[in-house]
Image (cartoon, rainbow, N blue to C red; front, side, top):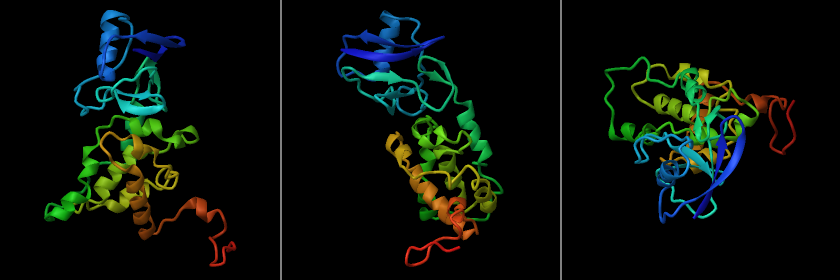
Length: 237
């Protein structure tokens, strides 16, 4: 079986490798290539159980976890997009992760007197499964035009805390995500399609938009049209 890997050291090069493995994960194939053919091949891995997210790469243009993806003939493997490339399939996630801080994606001012019901616990249970693999960040087309976009996984984490009944300062988080945040998302759903945990950042962003409207905010892009549209579709100025 032959596969191609986008290599990067000082220059970009697509290199083809042939391996004698069947029904193997991409991580197993990468290990085989590094062990028997090319010790310079560089990639990241950790748990080998689709839990740590460190082996996230792109195969044929789609983000996957190398430890879970089964390799096919002719696959093209590349590093994640929208993040600085260090070498081969290894990227620097520092900037991507920094958006969690910018979005204030943490629990603050927790009310200890609030008892959580089963419904409260279920409301943001799925968002807690995020493994920060960066797949949604790589798949997001907004970064091609706005490098300061807070991004899918940061906004998903904001929803996790805003929807928590124990959070006493949801308004502060809602205010933070108005710039380079919820209104910049195109709702294309690319983030949801590549999430290994089946988290829908698109749905979370839509819920954050609803919270924003309730808090008195509105889409600045809509406002630029002059105030909206009438029932007959004509613009209101």
